[in-house]
Length: 58
Image 1: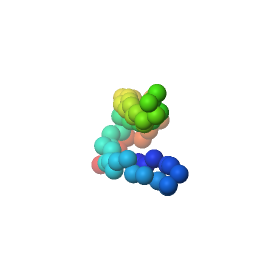
Image 2: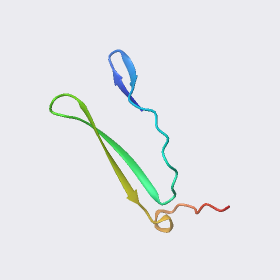
Image 3: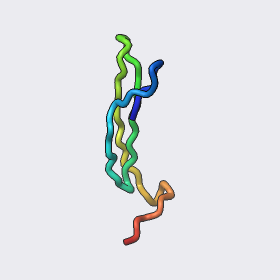
């Protein structure tokens, strides 16, 4: 993840997201009243059958 600015892209963090077929993760970035970047995360559980995803066959 990085932040785009006048001087170019500035890395915010390097991450490795967990892989889960029944989980969707979202990161939301906002600019706060003081001008600083704020991030919020949302994790949602989803039913793989209802979402149309294929089950992992091993």
